[in-house]
Image 1 (spheres, rainbow, N blue to C red):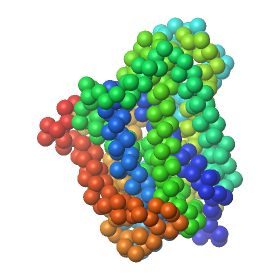
Image 2 (image 1 turned 90 degrees about the horizontal axis):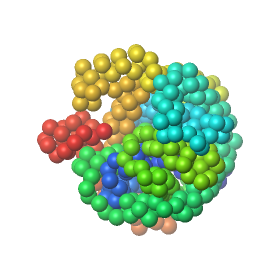
Image 3 (image 1 turned 180 degrees about the horizontal axis):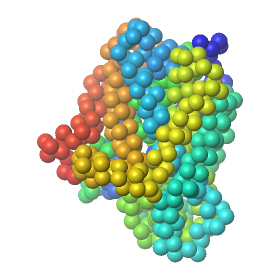
Image 4 (image 1 turned 45 degrees about the vertical axis):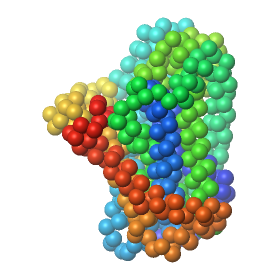
Amino acid sequence: MAGQRAQWGSRLGFILAAAGSAVGLGNIWKFPYITGENGGGLFVLIYLACIALVGLPIMMAEIFIGRATQSSPVGAFRKLSKPRSPWMGIGWMGVVVAFIILSYYSVVAGWAMHYTWISLTDSFTGKSPEEIGNTFTALFESAKLNLFWHTLFMAITIAIVMGGIRRGIELCSKILMPTLFLLLLILLAYAMTTDGFGKAFSFLFAPNADKLTSAGVLEALGHSFFTLSLGMGAMITYGSYLKSKDDIVAASITVSVLDTAVALIACLVLFPIIFTVGREPSAGPGLVFVSIPIAFAQMPGGAILAPLFFILLTFAALTSAISLLEVAVSYFIDERGWSRAKATLTCGISILVVGIPSALSGGTKFFGEQFQTLTSYLRINDGEGFNWFDFFDYVATNWMLPIGGLGIALFAAWRVGNKAREEGFKAGTRFGKLYWGWVFLLRYIVPIAVLLVFLNAIGVLDILGVTSDDAN
Ligand code: TRP
């Protein structure tokens, strides 16, 4: 065990780091396109309910477990139950999930860096939609570009985590997060001046049931885990660097509100721009990497706004990536007694290697087509199959995060002693009155909701005819 365990330098530092973990590609890349695909309005409302009733209680549970034990996930479950307890499996799974998620997350983050680079050097202005579409295809299929940016992004992530809690993660969050908010507000101010803003606003907030399916409801729930960084101990780890008097209720609410605000503002930036040039927001994953550059290319000021947007996306990805790496690193420091440098380099380089198949998914036969054929034979993803990239995302988001989140909720609500739980929740907070509401949500609402996501993921709801179209 390393001597003195690290702690955050300030409350604000913790909040910015936790918000940095939560705010990521999930908010700025994924949320807008799934909202577009699900027709806006009602989907957003359901998403907000999922955040408040499922995400928020689990976030409180994770931070509570971390702060109470001052340990990374594996040790945290041991300390609150007993040595060799099966609950420790949730902690182990978290370490594995960190490797999986970061390995492909870094690939998309690499795309954001590549786009920052082209929008700064070459610029999209004056290019035709076809040319811009081809830019993305060329990137997606290029082994060289994907490997280059994936490696660079991991190297930066490693460098920050190696700096430690205060001088690495906290310092970097204190610089990147305010910059991110500022960039977002600049882009929002611009979007408000465009013709499409009114249409985008009503698309986002007027309840519209047209396109929403029950699969969409479950997608909203699943996404609330991913976007708040829940289900694999990231918030346990960050919570473990808190002092015992810090207010976990207020911190969780602040982080969830910031995360939700960024997701909604991202839509209010992207949709008006899309509507103004007469496109639709239902373009799927290509929304940010194809539709948006096409729109910027046609808009006044686009040459300046495009790089700002992709810098924003890169920063958001970076503060999330460091939280993923920190989960793995903290395990080796706390449980194996490794130095931070050794743990960070070992984990970081392993993740870089695990990510290679994902980086090559768009190009090579093996990691793209042949693996896809194999998974389609196995009838994974309705027989359409996955490449590596999609496969990792599918396994981690649809299976491991919900299982982890369920485990954490059950553990905090049923396994941890009443006294320890109540004292832990109430220490240092003005919101002590919410205690029973929190326990109720964790005990009943969260398990039911997670079970639904889970049954949906394994296709049981399809068989029962509950969902009307494919869930992914
Ligand atoms: N929340 C981040 C996003 O929205 C991704 C992320 C970071 C994450 N850490 C996590 C997801 C831990 C699940 C678990 O992009």
